[in-house]
Amino acid sequence: MPAPLASPEAAAGEGLPKVVGRVALVSYFFPPTGGAGTQRAAKLARYLPDSGWTSTVFCADSGSSVSQWTPEDESLLANIDERTEVVRSPGVGEAWTDRVGDAIEALVESGEIDAVLVTMSPFWLAPLIERLGPRVPIIADLRDPWALDGVPIYRHWFQWRQDLRRMGRTLEAAHAVVMNTPEARDVVLRTFRTLSPERVRAIGNGFDAEDFRTAEPKPRPEGTSFMLVHTGTFLTRQAIRPPTLVARMKSRVHYRPEPLQPMGRSVGPLLRAMELLRRDKPDLLDGFRFVNVGTLDDDTRRWIDESSVSDIVVATGYVPHAEAIGWLMGADALFLHLHGLPAGHRARIVPGKAYEYLASGRPILGAVPAGDAFDLVQSRARGVVADPCDASSIAAGLERLILSKGALVEPALSDPDLTRFDRREIASRFAELLSACVREGAR
Image (cartoon, rainbow, N blue to C red; front, side, top):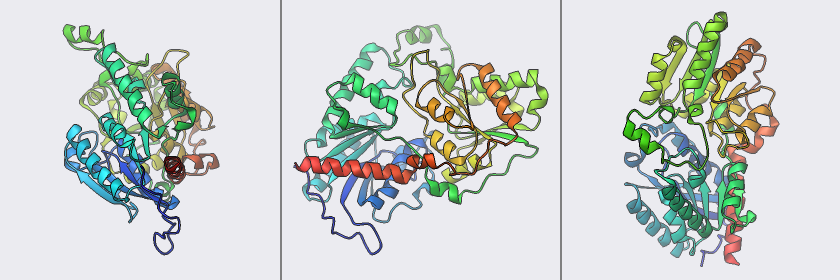
C-alpha cells in the first residue's frame, strides 16, 4: 500500500507553501554534474516545493557521473530548495539501482515518502519502476523516447525488439508516464495500446526565467558584427562513414526505430552553408562569427579545423550554465539543429536548448525536420526554418538573418505565450500529477 498523503495542514515553515507530500526523485545525473540531462531534475528539485512537494533526490556521486559530456558545474547547485535532501550513491547499473531501491523501500515503509518520480535516461534505471510500482505511486519520466528514439543505434532489429518489450513492461508498471513532447506521447500510445491516454502525459522541458533576469550578455569576440551562437553538442561521429570494410558491413545490420538522416546532427551542414556564403557572397560574412558554446568531440573539432571557414568559428568549450545563458543574450541569432527525416515523418524530440532559445528573444535558425521543434520555431516571427541536411537551405536562412541586422531581436521573456515553458509551471504540472497518483493509489 502507498504511504498516506501528508496532511495539507502541515506547514513547511513560516512564509512557505504547505507541504502536500514528499517525492523520491531519482535522477542519476544531478548537480554538480552538468550537461543537458541534469537540468530537468535540478529545476524540479528547485520548484516542486512551490506546489507543496518536497524532494529526496537519489543521484550518483560526481565521481561516477562526471564525464566528457557531463562535466562538473557547481553553479547548478545554487537555489536548490533548502528542504531538498540529496542522497548520492557511487557506481553504475544494477548495483546502483539495487542500493537506491533498498533505500526508497525503507522510506516508503516508514511513511517518509509518498511517491516516486524516476527521470531517465539512463534507461537502466527502469527496474526501479517495476520493483517499486506495486508499493508506491510512481511516475516514469522519459526525457528521451527510449526504444522509440532514432538517435541511439541498435546492433540489430532483434536487440531493438528486446529493448522495446522492456520499455513496455516498465511503462505498464508505472502509475503515470511522462513524455517530453506531444509527438513522443502520440508514438507511445500508438505503440503500447494497453496504456490509457489518461496515464500518459506530455510535459516538455523549458527555461528558468530567473536565469534570464540575472544573466549578463557575453561580449562579442573582437571585430564581430554578427554572432550566431549554438549551445550544446554536435553528434558528428554518426554522420561519418565507417572507416573499415568490417565496420561498414556491421553498420548494414544496425537498426534505428526512426529513418533519420544523422548528417543533420553534425556540424557539417552548417559549415558547408557558411562556405557557400563565403564563396558566393563574401561581403555577407565580413564580421560574422559562429560561436559554439559546449563540448566538442574530436570528430566535430576535426571537421571545423579542416573547413575553409574555421577562421570565423569560435569554440568556447563547456561553460557553466549561467555563462551559456549569457552567450544566448549576447547573440544576434541562435542555431538549432536536428537530424533529417523523410517526408511524412515527424521528429519525436525537441532539443532542450530550444526553450531557452525561445526565452532569449533572439531569432532562431532552426535546421530541423517536421515535428514539435519545427512548429515552435516556425510559429514565431523571429524564427527561420531550414532543411537540416541541406547546406543551401541553411545558407538561405542564415543570409536572411544577417540581412535583418538585428530587427528580429526582442527582449528576453517578452513573449507571454512562453510562460507554459517556464520551469515553475512545469514543476506545477508535475506536482498535480504526483498528487493525482497519490489519490488514485489511496483508492
